Length: 189
Image (cartoon, rainbow, N blue to C red; front, side):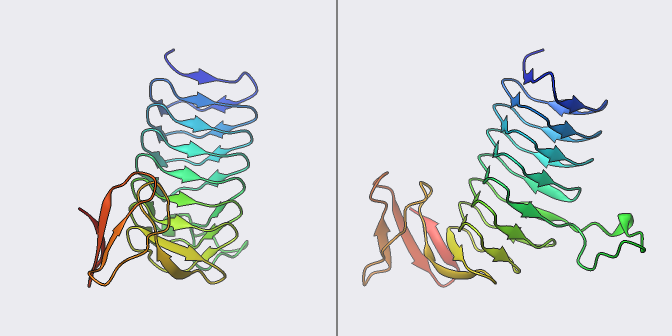
């Protein structure tokens, strides 16, 4: 094996796990899921059937990733954050054929205890603040906070808030990379 699974975890048949991935205590990964390379799956994580997790994804403790969720490369899922996969759940009504797709794009971060309502896309490098409830699509590089989550600004690929000048240009204070605010959102130059 070129990945690590703690002895207390269960990996069903038909799961694909990439090189150098680590799956820690008390996890359950269900059949037909795909986990990329160099991922870190924290304690007490549940991954449902048909979930797709890209490379270098960090899933912190106590996260359930339900069917319909796709996480691209370099995504960070904070401790105890929550996904849903059916808009109108009822215990007595079976809707397994109605799971909605939720996509978390490359480099996005979802903070601790945030909730992502299904059927939405979290844009590239977006940052969802701790405890926020996402009820709509999120643009690339957007900083979202609150319940319901509202956009409060823009962040760099390093997660640093961006301050735009009169020419709609900003420089990340950590990476020194430059960004431009356009009518369609933020782009890295």
